[in-house]
Amino acid sequence: MTVVRSSPVSHGWTTVGPLRLHHLRWDGAEVAAGGLPVLCLHGVAGQAWAWNGAAPLLAAGRGTAYALDMRGHGASSWALDGDYSTASMTADVAGWIEANVDGPVDLVGLSWGGLVGATLAASRPELVRRLVMIDVPPEFAQAVDDVPPRPAAFATLDEVIGFEAGANRHAPAEHIEVLAAGSVRPGPSGLERCHDPVFLTTW
Image (tube, rainbow, N blue to C red; front, side, top):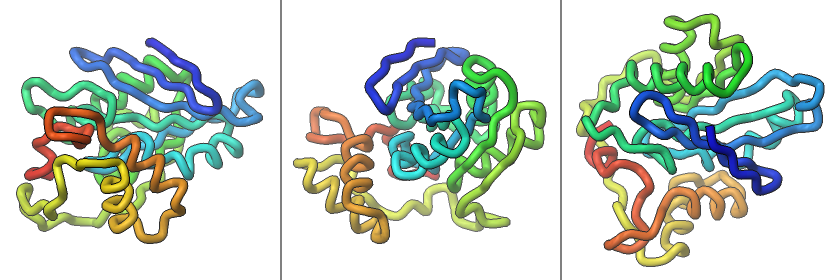
């Protein structure tokens, strides 16, 4: 595992199988006393910075909070074989927990992250102490290619901020700015989404 510290957030990278997975870490006051770790998982086309508003509060109350970029998202590796199945995502998260945390985690998952969390809790219960699922319906009838249109690239960061503000209407402005900056990276077309382009057309 590689760790880069930049207070109050640490960046870490862990090799799990052929992939290099990136995470963010926030430490609270109880970390020295062995506070219980919390792991946050984003939804499809999301990334770890989506938890920047909630994770520091979780860390303050629990000790340590992590937010993982799942495969194909954020600063983690893309799957060269195109495998983005829930089963493979779940195996990644299990490998990450085993490499980074001594014991089970309290897991918080949003949308697809919640599905991954539920799958992990069912298949590897020794790794999940408690599970919180956010915005996970009991069944999902959409086709895999029924994806709302969204831009693949932006000309400026202000455009990214405007898009994220429209998609997250109740989020504070400072959270939107962090989310926007973390969701793109420079590329041939401008500021490009930092997830595999497959998620522009496929859930």
